[in-house]
Length: 296
Image (tube, rainbow, N blue to C red; front, side, top):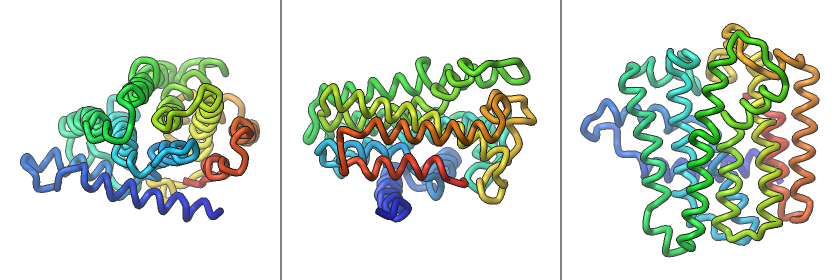
C-alpha cells in the first residue's frame, strides 16, 4: 500500500466536500466568508476526517455517506488553528504557508471566523440527511464524543494548560496531559466517531480507542520535534516558537533523542492495538507510521 497516494485520494474527497460546505468568497458579507475559505481551503493534511472514514470502512460502514460528517471534524480543527494563532495565544504569523487568519483579516474577523467554523461543524454533523443512512443514536453518540474532545474535556483544557505552563516548571505527567487534550483529543474523537457510526462492538471500540490515544500523543510529540528540527519553509509556519515562548514540550523535557524514541514506541503500540483486525487494519497502521515519520 502506498500510504501517500491513499491519503491523497481521501484528501481529494474531503476537499471537494469542504468546497460545497463553505459559501463562496463573495457571499455577503465577503470579509467573513473570505476568512473562512482562507483558513480551510487549500491547506492541511485532513488527517482527522480521513481517520474517521478509514475506521468506518474497516468496521463495514459505507464511508462515502460519512464524508460531510467527517468534514465537520476538519472544521473544528480549522477553528482551533485560527484561535491558536491569535496574539493572545501563540501569536503565530503564518499557517500552512500563508499568513494566519488574523494577519490576513484582523483579529476581530479571525475570532468570528473561528466561532463560525465551530458552529458550522455541528450544523454539518447534525444534517438530517445522515438519518437516512445511520442510526440516530449512533449519530448522537459520535457527536457527543466530538463535543467532549472540542470542549472542556479536551482541546479547551489542553490549550488552557499550554498557555498557563509557559515559562514554568513542568513534569512528564502534566506534559502528557496537555498533549493528549490539546491535540490528541480530537484525533481520538475522529477515530471513535468512525467506529461508532459503523456500529462497532465494544471490543473493537476499545481497540480503536487505544489506537487513537497513542497516535494522538505521537502526533503532538512529532510536532514538538519538528518545531526544533523542521524549517519554516517545509512546515509553512514559524519554527522555534515553542522554545522562545517557554512551552511545555517533549524535547524541552526529555531531549530530542528520547522524544523520537517515544514516538516510535507509541507508533508500535498503536499498531499492536489493531491486532484483532488482521490485514484489514493495514491502512490505519500505515497512517500511524506516516504520522510518526512526517517532516511537515
